[in-house]
Image 1 (tube, one colour):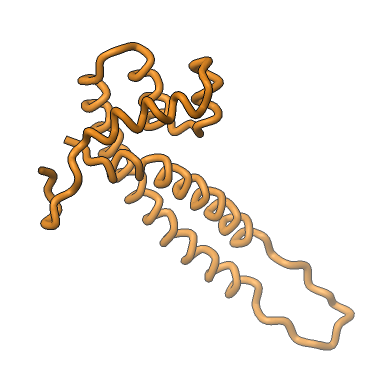
Image 2 (cartoon, one colour):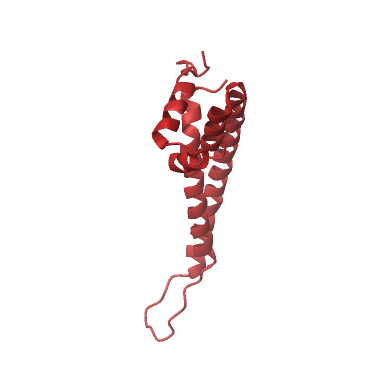
Length: 141
Protein backbone atom coordinates (compact mmCIF):
# COMPACT_ATOMS: atom_id res chain seq x y z
CA UNK A 1 0.00 0.00 0.00
CA UNK A 2 1.25 3.44 -0.87
CA UNK A 3 1.49 6.16 1.76
CA UNK A 4 0.34 9.75 1.47
CA UNK A 5 3.92 11.02 1.35
CA UNK A 6 4.91 8.51 -1.31
CA UNK A 7 2.09 9.34 -3.70
CA UNK A 8 2.66 13.07 -3.32
CA UNK A 9 6.39 12.56 -3.97
CA UNK A 10 5.76 11.08 -7.44
CA UNK A 11 5.40 14.37 -9.40
CA UNK A 12 8.41 15.86 -7.60
CA UNK A 13 10.53 12.81 -8.42
CA UNK A 14 9.37 12.95 -12.05
CA UNK A 15 10.46 16.62 -12.28
CA UNK A 16 13.80 15.77 -10.69
CA UNK A 17 14.44 13.04 -13.28
CA UNK A 18 13.51 15.42 -16.07
CA UNK A 19 15.97 18.06 -14.78
CA UNK A 20 18.68 15.44 -14.37
CA UNK A 21 18.16 14.23 -17.94
CA UNK A 22 18.52 17.78 -19.24
CA UNK A 23 21.73 18.20 -17.26
CA UNK A 24 22.99 14.84 -18.55
CA UNK A 25 22.38 16.00 -22.12
CA UNK A 26 24.38 19.16 -21.35
CA UNK A 27 27.26 17.13 -19.86
CA UNK A 28 27.38 14.84 -22.87
CA UNK A 29 27.51 17.82 -25.20
CA UNK A 30 30.33 19.36 -23.17
CA UNK A 31 32.21 16.06 -23.14
CA UNK A 32 32.17 15.83 -26.93
CA UNK A 33 32.77 19.53 -27.62
CA UNK A 34 36.45 20.31 -28.09
CA UNK A 35 37.27 24.02 -27.90
CA UNK A 36 39.07 25.47 -30.88
CA UNK A 37 42.76 26.06 -30.44
CA UNK A 38 43.95 29.59 -31.03
CA UNK A 39 47.27 29.14 -32.77
CA UNK A 40 48.09 32.85 -32.61
CA UNK A 41 47.96 32.93 -28.83
CA UNK A 42 51.18 32.61 -26.89
CA UNK A 43 49.50 31.07 -23.87
CA UNK A 44 49.44 27.32 -23.54
CA UNK A 45 45.98 25.86 -23.11
CA UNK A 46 45.24 22.89 -20.96
CA UNK A 47 44.36 19.73 -22.77
CA UNK A 48 40.74 19.77 -23.95
CA UNK A 49 40.55 16.02 -23.46
CA UNK A 50 41.10 16.47 -19.70
CA UNK A 51 38.03 18.70 -19.50
CA UNK A 52 36.07 16.21 -21.57
CA UNK A 53 37.00 13.40 -19.19
CA UNK A 54 35.62 15.35 -16.26
CA UNK A 55 32.32 15.82 -18.07
CA UNK A 56 32.24 12.15 -19.06
CA UNK A 57 32.80 11.01 -15.46
CA UNK A 58 30.10 13.34 -14.18
CA UNK A 59 27.74 12.15 -16.93
CA UNK A 60 28.31 8.50 -16.01
CA UNK A 61 27.60 9.22 -12.34
CA UNK A 62 24.48 11.21 -13.20
CA UNK A 63 23.22 8.44 -15.49
CA UNK A 64 23.44 5.99 -12.58
CA UNK A 65 21.52 8.39 -10.33
CA UNK A 66 18.83 8.83 -13.00
CA UNK A 67 18.49 5.06 -13.34
CA UNK A 68 17.96 4.66 -9.58
CA UNK A 69 15.42 7.49 -9.53
CA UNK A 70 13.54 5.94 -12.47
CA UNK A 71 13.39 2.60 -10.67
CA UNK A 72 12.03 4.34 -7.57
CA UNK A 73 9.48 6.23 -9.68
CA UNK A 74 8.30 3.03 -11.38
CA UNK A 75 7.90 1.32 -8.00
CA UNK A 76 5.90 4.23 -6.59
CA UNK A 77 3.74 4.42 -9.70
CA UNK A 78 2.94 0.69 -9.49
CA UNK A 79 1.86 1.23 -5.89
CA UNK A 80 -0.18 4.27 -6.99
CA UNK A 81 -1.87 2.23 -9.73
CA UNK A 82 -2.89 -0.35 -7.13
CA UNK A 83 -4.38 2.40 -4.99
CA UNK A 84 -6.15 4.04 -7.96
CA UNK A 85 -7.71 0.68 -8.84
CA UNK A 86 -9.51 0.73 -5.47
CA UNK A 87 -10.94 4.23 -5.99
CA UNK A 88 -14.58 4.49 -7.02
CA UNK A 89 -15.73 6.81 -9.76
CA UNK A 90 -14.41 7.71 -13.17
CA UNK A 91 -13.46 11.32 -12.39
CA UNK A 92 -11.41 10.57 -9.24
CA UNK A 93 -9.58 7.76 -11.04
CA UNK A 94 -8.85 10.01 -14.01
CA UNK A 95 -7.56 12.82 -11.77
CA UNK A 96 -5.25 10.49 -9.86
CA UNK A 97 -4.03 8.78 -13.03
CA UNK A 98 -3.24 12.04 -14.79
CA UNK A 99 -1.47 13.45 -11.74
CA UNK A 100 0.44 10.45 -10.40
CA UNK A 101 0.87 8.10 -13.35
CA UNK A 102 1.21 10.61 -16.19
CA UNK A 103 2.76 13.24 -13.83
CA UNK A 104 0.87 16.16 -15.34
CA UNK A 105 0.74 19.49 -13.53
CA UNK A 106 -2.48 20.49 -11.80
CA UNK A 107 -3.43 23.03 -14.46
CA UNK A 108 -3.07 20.44 -17.23
CA UNK A 109 -5.07 17.88 -15.24
CA UNK A 110 -7.82 20.48 -14.76
CA UNK A 111 -7.87 21.24 -18.49
CA UNK A 112 -7.99 17.56 -19.43
CA UNK A 113 -10.87 16.68 -17.09
CA UNK A 114 -12.73 19.94 -17.73
CA UNK A 115 -13.03 21.09 -14.13
CA UNK A 116 -11.61 23.92 -12.08
CA UNK A 117 -8.16 23.26 -10.62
CA UNK A 118 -9.38 24.03 -7.12
CA UNK A 119 -12.15 21.44 -7.44
CA UNK A 120 -9.87 18.65 -8.65
CA UNK A 121 -7.33 19.42 -5.93
CA UNK A 122 -10.11 19.06 -3.38
CA UNK A 123 -11.08 15.66 -4.80
CA UNK A 124 -7.43 14.56 -4.72
CA UNK A 125 -7.02 15.80 -1.15
CA UNK A 126 -10.07 13.83 0.02
CA UNK A 127 -8.80 10.64 -1.63
CA UNK A 128 -5.15 10.90 -0.67
CA UNK A 129 -5.76 12.11 2.89
CA UNK A 130 -7.28 8.68 3.60
CA UNK A 131 -3.95 7.01 2.85
CA UNK A 132 -1.82 5.80 5.73
CA UNK A 133 0.96 7.93 7.07
CA UNK A 134 4.37 6.24 7.18
CA UNK A 135 5.33 4.55 10.43
CA UNK A 136 8.49 5.78 12.18
CA UNK A 137 10.13 2.46 11.30
CA UNK A 138 9.55 2.83 7.55
CA UNK A 139 6.57 0.51 7.03
CA UNK A 140 3.03 1.80 6.52
CA UNK A 141 0.29 1.36 9.11
